[in-house]
Image 1 (tube, rainbow, N blue to C red):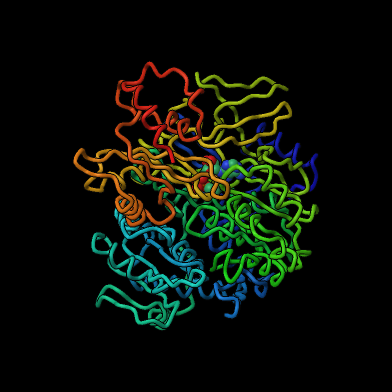
Image 2 (image 1 turned 135 degrees about the horizontal axis):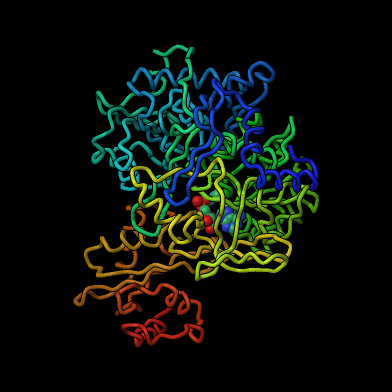
Amino acid sequence: MINTFADYKKAYRRSVEEPEAFWDEIAETFTWRKKWDKTLEWDFHEPQVKWFQGGKLNITENCLDRHLEKQGNKTAIIWEPNDPDEESRHITYRQLFVKVCRFANVLRQNGIKKGDRVCIYMPMIPELAIAMLACARIGAVHSIVFAGFSSQAIAKRINDSQCKMLITANEVYRGTKRVNLKAICDEALKDTPSIETVLVYRRTVEPTEMQEGRDKFWFEELQKATDDCQAEEMDAEDMLFILYTSGSTGTPKGMVHTTGGYMVGTAYTFENVFQIEKDDVYWCTADIGWITGHSYIIYGPLAAGATTVMFEGIPSYPDYGRFWEICEKLKVTHFYTAPTAIRALARQPIEFVEKHDLSSLKVLGSVGEPINEEAWHWYNDNIGKGNCPIVDTWWQTETGAIMISPLAGITSARPTFASLPLPGVQPTIMDDQGRELNGRRESAEGRLAFKFPWPAMARTIYNNHERYKDVYFSTFPGMYFSGDGAYRDATGNYRITGRVDDVVIVSGHNLGTATVENAINEHEKVVESAVVGVPHDVKGNALYAFVILYDHVEPSEALEKEIREIVSTTIGPIAKPDKVQFVNGLPKTRSGKIMRRILRKIITNDIENIGDTSTLLNPEIIEDIAQGVK
Ligand code: PRX
């Protein structure tokens, strides 16, 4: 582990000068059934990246089996339920190992084999972790869909990767609400012919509708299974999971992560960024349905043998002190959350924080969007009490692991700066003409790209390698383009300035404007729409939809509601626009492209800075739209 700033400098230099030797040494600390023959083969033009080729392993042997001898009785997962009166569950490494093996046998009994895709749509309960690890144990590819997505969104993802099985729960608790997940799945299942079996975990005692022959209860299946499960031998480059993320077209991208590099990358970054020690209690508040949960609730922490907390509930239930109550109760040492949560909690009376003892905390983390200065200071002063380094971690679903971040207490943490690249990461800033801004000791602002592969990067988009190439490797040939803008100061520290493409981060969720527009355009009274992100105090960004209706249709509040509803049912409640404005036209280029940049300027009342509008097909529409801005 890196212990000092000098260590960091040394590791960084080595990772650039001798990347293969650098990663070999780290990879050697894991359990492989057979060592790799070749550390790295890559070509960012194809693009093609292979790490640890010829290496054989199973990631669960690294996350579970190898810890049994020395720390089988250590807690692997602490689960905190939605209802504070329900008991927490503490699951040791040995118990988790047994549960995973047993459930892996359930999967095998139900015909799942290496390479099969399994969709998981579950709440934040330990069984979600067990299901994903069980897939990994037998070499099945998990595709976890966040349990807030709609039936249509589930169906789309299942069909894209032709999943054979769906694992879900009957219901989920969210604060005072109960949501029937199985009913949402049933709706999706009307349109997913590849699914042969549905396994249902009973989270509540409510009766659950089951379809004979297809649906089976988790517990009943477990009774037929033994605990003994040989892990499947995987190639380092075998697929571990698919995780869908939004893009700038309507279809989500199934990012493919493979086994060896992902394991090495997540564990290495986890240990070094958070500076984890033996008895630490680490809590990441993300949902496992997103990459943060995959990499930093499950795979990274378990590969590192740490204790990881999983929370089922929401930050506001039973009151806005819930996060801090849990930190006190479980003596959390590392707390990793999103700026949107920090901003929402910072608006509440400070008593919610003050009534809890937060003295166990050592390190705080932030992820998902740029953290603004005010939120950073609130977090630092009130939660960290000025004593906990904050790691502002920049990364993406596509990068698999943290790329740019302070190392807690070792490299400096300055508000709004994700700071320095981790060892093995070679960022650069590009200008609009595709030139690299690499002046030494000079600041630069432009687009964030990467010049060299890192082990945890996604290898492709499932069944669509062309799109992978097009989205990430064509803007700056020979480099990976992140889609983000960034500023680098004269000392080499990076600040992320936000997305430069048609993706908007709402409450830390990555949403494609095209996906939301497609949903709105499904409404029979809508001709066309344009969705943009606008700054929002808590959510970071909110969605604002401009909608053109057919000539004979009268705009109304009811229609506005219907439009928001259609987004909710097509994608999920997280994608509902905050505002819907009916317009007569949209600013377009002569080639018909909607100028979302101009729409953003109109909403933020920045018309003076719109720039040259003479290239527009319909410049007069700007004034018209501005009149109606809410
Ligand atoms: O725009 C960046 C923002 O989130 C995007 C990636 O979203 P997603 O794939 O959903 O993964 C989120 C969790 C890793 C990035 O392109 N982002 C993420 N972390 C930060 C950030 N922006 C600024 N600062 C961060 N620390």
